[in-house]
Length: 197
Image (cartoon, rainbow, N blue to C red; front, top):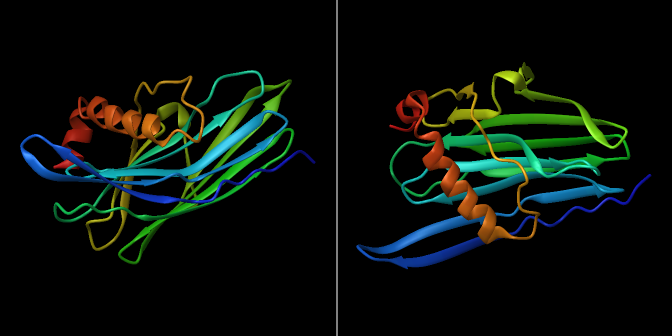
């Protein structure tokens, strides 16, 4: 059994001054990381910013490859207040398989993600994602649009060109900047713009 590292979940509240606005509040949940013999998986990283949806994502890095997204969640809430779901991850990895079980909860509603990646000769051979027990076809998209604002939670998924060769864990500034950039990129999709209204 390889070495297992699970980083503590740290909640940071960053207050930044910006021209034309007295305060912009950013909340970052750094999530966790598990690694075994160079096979690394992260889960539950979440970034929320005033005027933006909350962004939650996981990543995976095979021993012979770069870090890439496993899923990317945009969470929508009622009102314009800065809101962030309660996010928890349970990560497990060995020499051939890595699993991220992440849950997002808000207002009594829950989204459960289970992502599993398998290796073959040091490279990613397969990946599976379920959302609240339903299997998602990752060929049709890794972006999940999750609406916590309604009486019952709803979600859908979209296909998008997500970057790879991602920053390594432990650099919240880089990942927060990436999350902001991704939201702006995803807004180019009419379905995402409509969801975020």
